[in-house]
Length: 361
Ligand SMILES: [Zn+2]
Image (cartoon, rainbow, N blue to C red; front, side):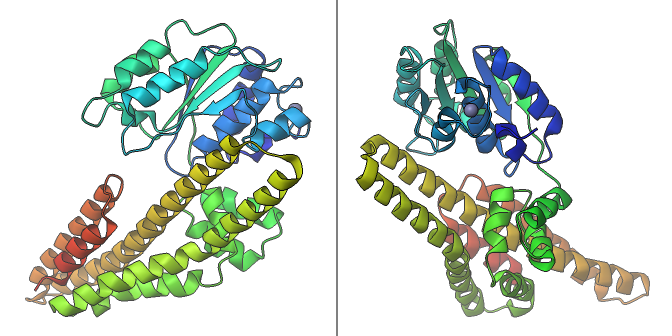
């Protein structure tokens, strides 16, 4: 069977449950999955299945409109800052009260709802309130990468949809099916951090192997002078910019197509804004993922180093013990940097701190 859920990889059980729910929806769903699990894609596919007369055929005009983000009854609420603000949640509630224009549902989509419990004035209580007694034809689709305890009351009002990150082998197979060569598919899947979208961009990026080599070479270049660490921090910025190039190119192509269609068919400005916001989200996510890949590549180098040093220590090399301690400290620093990556706005500062710690002057 080919339908809107066929595009979700490695989620066959969840897809079957969603097929059932598309016919008999409840008022609110919470899609839970780590980065790369396709929370965004699953919510979009489910929204299409809710609106489609055939419950998600993937080919009718309704499905196509929802998948392109152009269905006026499927509203994605945007967030301006790092945390959800109360007025943004109130906007979601206002949209939820609308009567749908079409035959389907009024669908309200909010991603990253774990960010309603952070920030200066958490907006989770407002979200909880908007989930109370929504109009009969309204369906909330919430997305989250994790569920902090403070979100429990919100969760209790939703049907939980768990999404697992796909395995590298699943991604590789999908890329092969899409016509990517065996070597490129293998390399891209291995560096995709479980994200098919990311794998597609990487499969189209001839510089991937060189970039991974560059990251592997970083530990050897940290020679212990502050100048070397500073220079490397700057170089990382350049490497990240280069890594963004294929994504930027495909986003620019999509935007050009969009402009052309807009001039032909007269597309609403709201759609364009939505597409631009989506492009910015994709860019931010890709950059963070690219840095995650770099840090985990460096981690692998230090792990190999640690294995050699431990062996030397067992063989009675007296100086190996202090080297083991130093390498462990560096692995801790890398772990800490990866943790900070999720919440920091200042990539430069994070890299500067990390590379100086790794240099150990
Ligand atoms: Zn359809």
